[in-house]
Structure formats: structure tokens, C-alpha cells
Length: 115
Length: 110
Image (cartoon, rainbow over all chains, first blue to last red; front, top):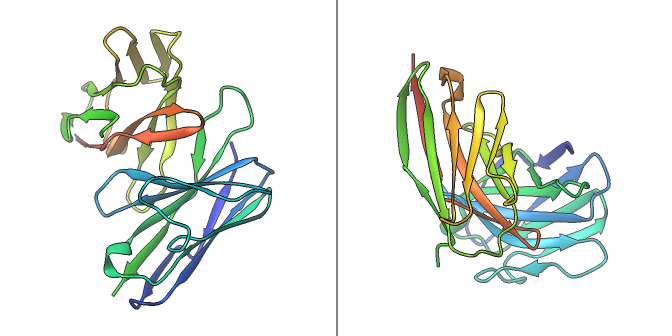
């Protein structure tokens, strides 16, 4: 399985500001994903980020609010824009394993609190 | 629309007992059924997974039972230990996308 790191691990931000979260993988992967986990809740897919193409967003998530970059096969960023307290969540990136039987492996998450 | 329903919401088991968590899904196109374990402050970690052509998979103390006709699958944790206390999520996968259940908070009492 891939080793995934995220920066920052946590942050406290003021409403109206933006935060960019970085996700680094120790091997090249085709598919990367960004999830949101609201306090005490399950995980919800925000978007799929493939290198060389625009991110694909799930229903309820838009590029203006959550712009994503995927400059190469080991790195991606998610920006949470114009934040409000409702954006307080854990943001997780994941990657899909390379084998046919592989599923997704998750990073440690970024814990965001918006005041 | 909730595509996967997980139960129970929380579970308390005595040390050495069996923990059972159930999930039910609706879409027969799902083709991969993983379980994730999440400790506080950590990201979810893949625990065990199964494909629909298999009815059971066992890895150590963890077993997935899969009932394709009933569209249900469950996680059994044998000889539960206090270190197993965590939140468990079932998930279903289709087209590289994972949809998660609501999660089960497991507490194993010593």
C-alpha cells in the first residue's frame, strides 16, 4: 500500500479565508481522491483528481469552492475557499492501489476548524 | 439517497466476545466491499475487503460474510480486544468510487 502524507495536519482559520491542503504519495498513482468527514460523520467524496485532466466533482461540491490541482502523479492539493464554520471538517486524500484487487488507501487527514 | 446502510450505530462488546457489524446495499452494480477501521485522529485504514464472487473471507480475527442475494455483508471480529475499539466503516465501490456507510463505534470492554 502507498504511504500518504498530508499538510497541514490541522489548522484553525477565520471565516472568509482560504486554506490549501497538500497530499503527497510515496509512489506514482493514477487516481487520487479527496473526501470530507464532518464531525462525527462518515466520509463523503468531494472529487476525483486525475493527473492531466480536470477534477471530477461529486454532486453538492463545486470547483469554485474546492479547487483541486494535480500537477503530477504523486501530489495533489485541495483548496477550501471562502471558508465558513460549516467547512469545519476533516479533509482526507486517498489513492487507489495499482493492482486489480486494490482499493483506496487514506492519508491521515487535515483537521480544519473555521471560526 | 443512502446507498449503503450500516448498523448498529454503536456497539459495546466484552473482551473476548464477537463483534458483528452489518451493512446492506441497494445497487447490484457495486463490485467491491471493503471495511475500514478508524481510530480517533487518524485516517481510515483498510481492514479487509471482499468481491461479490466470494461468500466469505477471513483474515486473522476478522471475517467478512457476503450474501449477494440479500445484498448484505457483515464484519465479524472474533475474540474482540480493547485495542479493537474504533469506528468501523463499511463501503461499497463502483467505478473507482467509494460510498461509505454511516459508521459503527465499537467499544470493547476489558
